[in-house]
Image (cartoon, rainbow, N blue to C red; front, side, top):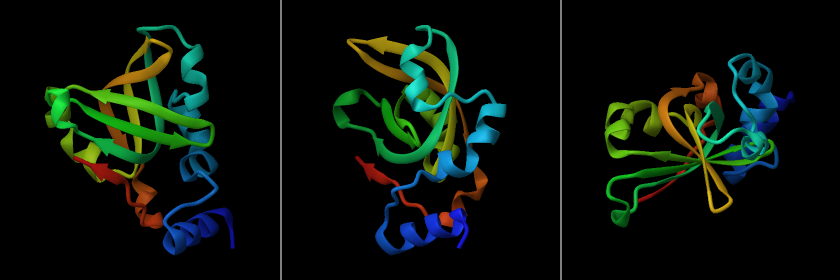
Length: 139
């Protein structure tokens, strides 16, 4: 089996993998699009425009967050925290909810040592369907 087949088999059989599909299979394409790996984000300038991408492992819209949505995107280097305001979420609902592998563009924030991207543009990496990936959605 090639790497793509091994990742798909891991995910079908166990729901997880020790390999990151977004990093292992897409990193070159993502770099060409200007996407930074999760581990690079803390070293970038606060308030700069950045792109991050990864497997959406968590989507949260807590009742106490006034409509804000929080995503966790995993790549081969770690996890990127994504914050989405209510209006942006409504305008981008489809790619945010329908894409397992997601590219996010927005402003880099760093408060109290926590780095996040306040996302305002979103794209799905369309071959995610090959993996039958499910995110863990919490309401």
